[in-house]
Image 1 (tube, rainbow, N blue to C red):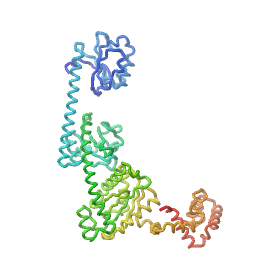
Image 2 (tube, helix red, strand yellow; image 1 turned 90 degrees about the vertical axis):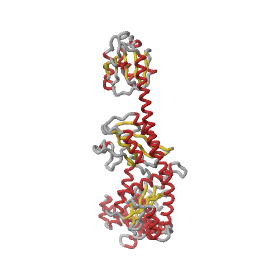
Image 3 (cartoon, rainbow, N blue to C red; image 1 turned 180 degrees about the vertical axis):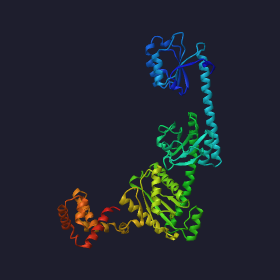
Image 4 (cartoon, rainbow, N blue to C red; image 1 turned 30 degrees about the vertical axis):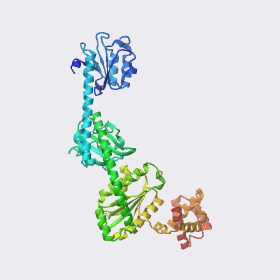
Length: 529
């Protein structure tokens, strides 16, 4: 600027990156209460002439209030600035500028304020132009991919839309070289953006990497993810964040629209899949054709997956988060299953999700499902614990009801035996599969009580210890090996064996009693199922 053409930087060169957003004039000693962040403070030195020894402390206090810079006109009230002040300014990085002697403050104020206003007007115009372009994309029927493409062109960078956990949903074309930027500080090995290392606005992940700006996509009270800009070889500015905030609003409209359409389609798809799994879909050929119209292929070898949300972790029935949690659960499964089998059927219900997918060409269904569950957990989109059950392979659509029952049973028993996060297939249930088929739980409880007697229900230390000893004895069928496993002296274990036989009968010599005890212990583990 012409008014600052003869200005000279005398200290604080490391703070030249600071942004000037306003101006102030210091003509009273107690200026601190009147300063604001990002100000250029102008002074003739008049209020400082009596306290030159305190200017070092004043610089530290101005820095603490995030002042942009100090401009001083020397000659009339101050002949020079004290070395203590300049040293303090260098130390904290607060630029101190000696102003030209022949320039009035009003000339500086007019030029700087005019420039600031022009820059703000340019930012608003750029933001408005980007908003109009994005709205036109949406009105033309464009989705998240179209928004990121347009945004990447407007902001000269790579734009992304991610889930709340950082899984990329849409992305503008990145540069051919050096992508993805930032390395492990910014990206997981599976391509997830590490949003937990970033924050709203602009920043640099960890200690190095590409400059990144990110803004949350929020509609109402629901968090739909993040819109992110990775700059290509330039520093990001606040104006970039303003454009991203406009883009986040547009992205929220697109996501809300897609959710509304998806809700209607999901209801229709869910009703038909429910009829199919209940055996009420009618003629098998008609069911195959109808599924094909929905994008599902059931005319091939299939397995059924059932993922059950942990009922103990469910939100209240009237909680505003109930719908979003189940929708996110289903959306995350659709995305992961679609990567393995685009023709699979994925439908979510209130506390359960059902997948009808083709048999994997590589590896077993159990291995494939374990990979999908691990991917879901790493995504961050699925926060609530769940258990997954896998059916046997079926070769005809008419067998899908049977496979669905198997998958549900595997999920239920697996959750009971191994807790949340279990992945169990029907053939791997073993004896638990047979026990779970007994419809009368009271009969199972009675059998357990009659067989285990006093060991059936007690939770005290002695009862649990005796049950553990009995289980290991039945597993090994060897007293010496049991003593080694439980770290007991041989004679101590012989005493315990005698106590157990007095309580339960001669199980060491009666194979039928041993079988009954083994079954009763499994029922005891399944108690409450």
